[in-house]
Length: 429
Image 1: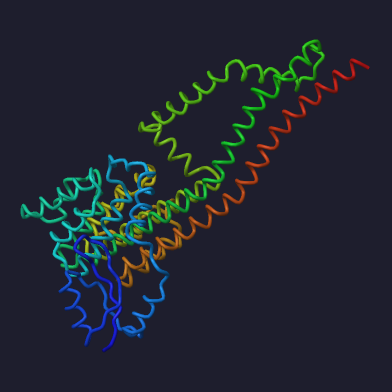
Image 2 (image 1 turned 90 degrees about the vertical axis):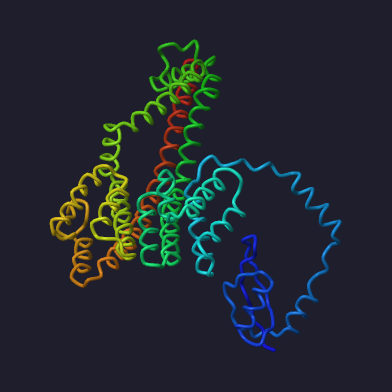
C-alpha cells in the first residue's frame, strides 16, 4: 500500500506531521479526519511503511517517563513566569493574520478558525481581543466590522483589505497576502534597526569612555598639576576643568541629559516639532534620501496591494496617503484623492519633488497597460531594495566615523595630560 506524508491541524490548533499508508490521497484524508485532524497537505512519499518503522526503530532509546518528567520539571521551575501583554502589538497582528489564512485555507469556517485561535492564545489582551471578534461574528456582523471596533490595533489599510476579501469571497487569499505584506514591512524595519544597533553601541561606549576618563582618570593627575597654576598648557587646563566638572557634578549632568531627552521627545510630539523633525529627516545628507525612498515604498506597496485586491481607486488612494509617516510628504499627497475624483491621472497628481522620474514613469506605464497595481508593487520592491542598499552604504561610512571620533576625543584628553606632565618635568629641570 502506498505511503503518504501529511501535514494536518489538530483540535488544539497544533500542526501535526507524519507518514501514513492508504489506498489513495482521498483515503488518507479520510483517515486523518477520523483521527480528528484537519488535513493541510497530503502528498505521496517514496518511503514505505516498513522504511518508516525501521527509521523509528533506529532512533536512540528515550529516557523513561519519570526521568523525563523530572527533568522537564527542573527546566520549568527555573523559568520566570511569562508576563501578560498589555497591548496587541505588530507581532501579534502578523501572527493572527498568518494563522487565520492557514486555517481558512484548510477549510475551517471563520467562527471555528477564531475559536482555534482563542484556544491557543495567551491569557490577557490577546484572548480578549479574539473573543471580541468572535462575539461580533456571532452577532451577525462581518469580520471587518469587528476589526473596526479595534481601530487602535488594526489600521484602515488592514480593515479595507479584509473587507475586500469578504466582498470577493476570497478572504483566505487576502489574509495570506496581508500576512506577506506585514512580513515584508517587518523585514524592512528589522533590517534598518539591526543595522543601527552596532553604531548605537559604538556611540554609547564612546560617551561612557569619555565620561569615565574625565570623571575618574583626569582627577588622579590634578594633584600633580596643583602647583603649576597658569603655567599649565591651555589644553591641559581645559581638560582638568572638565574633569573637575564631571567629577563634582556628574550626577547633575546625567539628570540634565535625561531632562533634555524628555523635553525633546515631548516637543517632537507637537505639530511644530514633528514638522521640524520631518524636514530635517528629508534634508540631512544620506538620511534624507533613505527616508524619502522608504515613504515612497510604503505608499506604493499599500496602494498596489489595495488595488490588487479590488479596493476602489479613490478609497485606495485615501488609505495609502494616510499610511505615509512623514508629515511633509503626506501633505504633498493630501490632494491626491480629490484629483483622482475629478478624473485626473495618478501619475500626473504625484509630486515630482517626492517621486523620481523613474517612479513616475513606472506609474504611467501601469496606467497605460491597465496593470497599475502590479507596477506599484514593483515600484515598492525597487524602492525597498534601494533603501536597504543605502542604509548599508551609510553605515559603512558611519561606523569608521564613530571610531575615529571616539579615538580623537580620547587622544585629545591623553595629549592634554601628557602636555601637563611634560610641563611639570620642564619646571623641575
